[in-house]
Length: 115
Image (tube, rainbow, N blue to C red; front, side, top):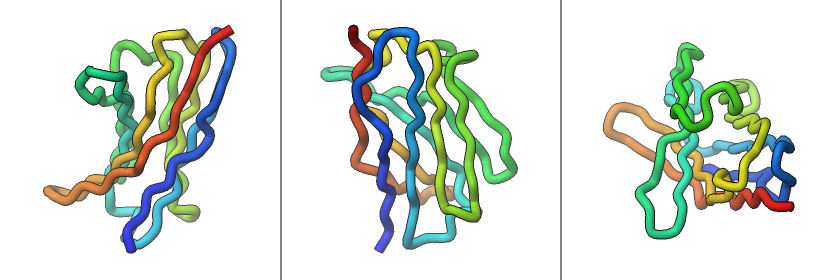
């Protein structure tokens, strides 16, 4: 059973920090590229950050310098460290695993940035 389970979302004040986790199971985690997406209501799902099997990373311009994606293959987990959070970061964040044409998605976790 393939599973991607996001956690770590919640309420945080502007300028604060939050770390999201995505725990994977049911597939060979280490050979999949991992990514974080986010989606606001009525909007297209946006790629936030991606990390390759070799550890290279890329970020959306909107989060560059504030967010950091990392992975710990021994724990089958990918993380998204979010710093200097802004109200516009208030969206549902989704974890994705990709291997060529095969994609797996998590159900998402909500981040709310508000005072």
